[in-house]
Image (tube, rainbow over all chains, first blue to last red; front, side):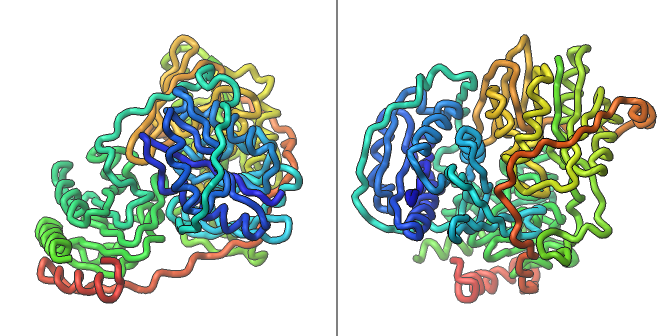
Length: 329
Length: 250
């Protein structure tokens, strides 16, 4: 079973970046097995238009399932579809560990009676086994896990941003595939609520994250953080737990031990003291900048660059400097 | 309303972990233990549901060594009705193997709702609850930040990246609970006293085949010590220069 199967996540008509990361990772794995990369691409009518992009990243075959009832995330119909395809003989099924992927992967594993590796940050083949890195204990420890699956395909979910999406162009075979059963006859019915701004970058995908803490003093002062994020042009906005608990920002923006764990190229911590729970969510960032009035704040211990000062003075100056820089380039 | 909540005993995370001599686990010396964070939210949400209805029971279940009874006792002192300890001296790093044991326990329990935390804070896989739901053939919703049960129907909210989805489902069902639902209560003295008399059954865990094993555990590389580059807005030009020329992130 040298072939590797992946699932392409499409939300609001857009192919998610994590899907390309999954295809690229599948490509590397399939090359190690001497096999092909196959992709399940499902959604509402027209979703098949993404097949070309999947081919550019290394997919050999794309199985397209279009159905009105698959336009929204449909965990029962989708897991039946992916598991049905996976029964055709694959060494592994790779799924991006987005909010939906973290739901889909264990469903597929259960349907296949397969073992699962969740939220891995590296993956390689070693003989009959898959060996992966998985951050545990809130990222304070890295576990190297070994999955020996026997006959069933191993199911693996990939941490967003941990794998790169690279070009490996080929013309993918595109096949229409029927849904598994009637996708509208499901028990769990999902309606997506509107996103505030569909162009808004997600924490998992943004190369830059600007995050705010209690040091901002009031909800309306988060505008400073938003302005700085806007100046970068490729930044998402995050927050500490204190801030989401107070309702200044939605829970989904929380970075930390019980929230999102992120690893952007640049993380700017604004008015964040650096509680251990927050550090657990952002310590894997490549470069960390901290702006805080308290020189003794623990955030400065993990920050590559720190500025001690009033956020109401420093942040607007930084916003202006980044704007100017981008205007020149 | 009969609710089961599956909980796990985990170390408290606010420490610097050391790796055990085996190289395959953390050194447990000196660690403090508690119920996993998300499991605490699930217990609280279950208790509130039964309290609101004025009838029903909350059964807490934990798989692990004898010490797992500590967190079961804590859940009982919060108000759970009874506890089941699935004894296993080792807890494998294999979500499917654990789900097999839990599903076997839950299968004939007659539960209207089976709840989990969305993941254990130590192993951080977040797969066990969903696998149990699929194994039992029940409607399953993963990572609820809101949950309402009325007249045998459930509705829930799940957070997505930059959005959310609203979900409806019939009971019986399996749900896993994210942060934001309910802050777990502290056990009252009265609750602690009452918990001592509540029933706790112990039986061996019927784990599935273990196919995921730990090769090694290691501490991630330390971040190089950072530096404070200046004070106030005057330090901004130097910051921008360093981000461009040294860190090369601009």
